[in-house]
Amino acid sequence: MEPIWQWGLDVIRTVQLVAGPALDAVFKAITFLGEEEFFLILLPLIFWCVDFAVGVRLAIAFLLSTYVNTGLKDLFAHPRPFEFDPTVQRHFAGVGGYGLPSGHSQSAVVVWGTIAAGFRKAWLWIVAVVLAVLIGFSRIYLGVHFPTDVFGGWAVGAAFLALYLALEPRVAAWLKRAGLAVQLALAVAVPLVLLLIYPTDDTVKPMAVLAGMGVGIALMGQVAPFSASGPLWQRAVRFLVGAIGLLVFYFGLKLVFPAEGEPLYFALRIVRYVLVGLWAGLGAPWLFRRLRLASLPLVHSAAP
Image (tube, rainbow, N blue to C red; front, top):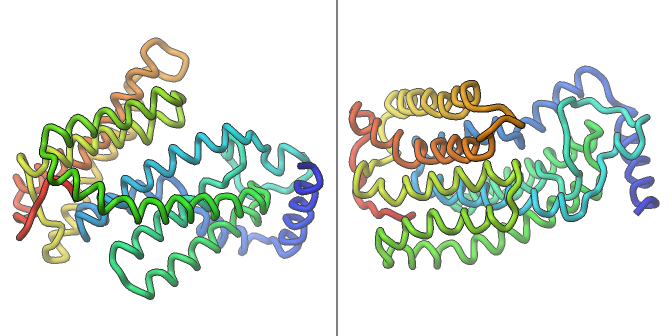
């Protein structure tokens, strides 16, 4: 692999010849579009305020893709450019873990591709491709990924997206026919099995959120069916209320739960992220209905 990595270092150094404060700011902003914090904003926004069904599909795709990315990174165990060669200039701090495939590049393809497919707009596919390219390139410019990491992320993301778009409608239709008991059982069993197959700190997060959200969505049809439509002011207030609750579970519980290395850390980490998913899928919609920030959908089912 060394010749390929050396070629990647040459590409990075060539790209960084034009580096400067202005471009640093631009590419840091672009790379933020592939960060977990951005998706923490985007996914609930679509889920609660734009289109419930598209939001559910998007959240499931993102969480499963994140799990796959973690497994592949640990399987390949490829270094970052600055780990392979400490002289490489890095314009982005706080990056850790292995490099291949690039999580930002993979998530960009999966997330924006799922959005484009969900809303069925040709211009959204153009946006999805442009964003995937820019986000991937930003990782090279910032010196945190080899070009091969980015190519790998795009390839894995495209394969995952194609498979997901082919299978998801069939699975969703089957779940709709299967009923609540089966939906609840699978909402817990599938993430649990995946977590048992590969139990790490990085897989706990997506699988625990998936379990909580899956249970919440299944129960939502019985407890708090709602429509993501409504006047703009209502959607804005809905998102604000939901986001406050999300921050409480996501960041608030982190402050009171045990830190890494302390007793019960792993178990309560699971609980924390299950609650994040449960809030997104059930707690927030229930509260929206109670506060009269959302109405009943014209047609509703427990599964998207």
